[in-house]
Image 1 (cartoon, rainbow over the protein chains, first blue to last red):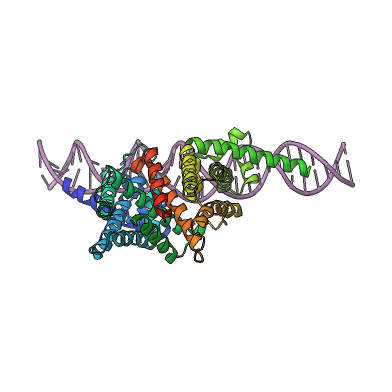
Image 2 (image 1 turned 90 degrees about the vertical axis):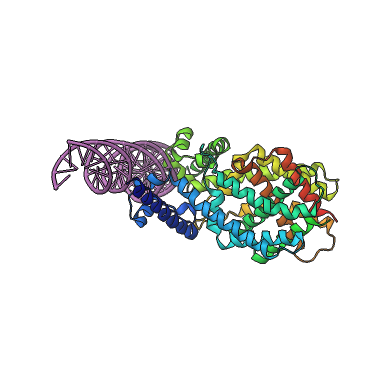
Length: 198
Length: 198
DNA sequence: TGCCCCGTCTGAACGTTGTTCAATGCACTA
DNA sequence: TAGTGCATTGAACAACGTTCAGACGGGGCA
């Protein structure tokens, strides 16, 4: 019995995550409704709470998937130009980040919009994925600076990631100023070329 | 009567904005409650809707004040070093931006967290203030590039603003990685010095 | 086989939201 | 003073996440 129940729970978890992802992708994080999801999954509202702590837990499950795909997209992009100069690899990664955010704006925004103010801990996979992403960025930077001061690479890594993130964030925020795609790429190239210029 | 009523409305608008600002400053945008505000202002819940379209309208009023103060803070900072080289003026502005966000995190976040998905137009003062801010940034950049290609200054302005914004945003997001203040300043200086280096 | 027991699942109910609108009150005019 | 029209009220509404007492059902024991 125990195994059977566990399987059902796992299956429901999967179903709910899939349905939630579809909603977030289509209409944004704020369109998630417990009752709607329960209807679509063919279960009771309460069943959601047998499988997730609350709606935030469900959102985190969706974000886990998104984060994985984002990481893969960036990794693949840099792998394709593995032999290019460090600056070009950085640009390729940043453009890939832009591509992903641009192709999945709602899922991407959900990564940062999830409410974590309550005492819930940041999931460990969150920090791990972020660490993996930072490691990929750090590599070309390390090649550009073979003899760095302590912490210098880390500072540059965070600065560059944050900068690209900011450009993508405000660029996609069409309410403030819808920036055409090629201009965003222009900003990213401008920034990275300047910063990494010896 | 008409004038008297108008005055009362104006006074209520002022009172509500002030109270809302206090709440946002202390506990963030999501802590705004229509009933709480009405209690504190000594009016009925419905009265709020005589003065604002909805809660988003009230939030926009709060953001209007915040935007004004932010602009003044940045302007003052750059005015103090008006004779310094362009790069130093850019750094002074960015540090001032960081200072403001750091000193008023909840009010600052509210500037970007306000829900505008509904068809409500972006208020014209929003674009105006943003344009003013961009103009301040563009000036040192124009000095650094006396003979720019068309649109180049604008692209640089947006790229730099977005980058600094991203650094401040992720740096203050303590859930992801609480970055100490001096490291954030380090990132900003690193970025701006590199980007503006001839 | 039949019965009981215990964990699972259900969905009505709860407490809070923002928002509305019929009813009330009030100030000013004729 | 009676009448009129708009400002103001706050109970009611719809929708939300979340809970929990009870219905349900399957596995172990007599």
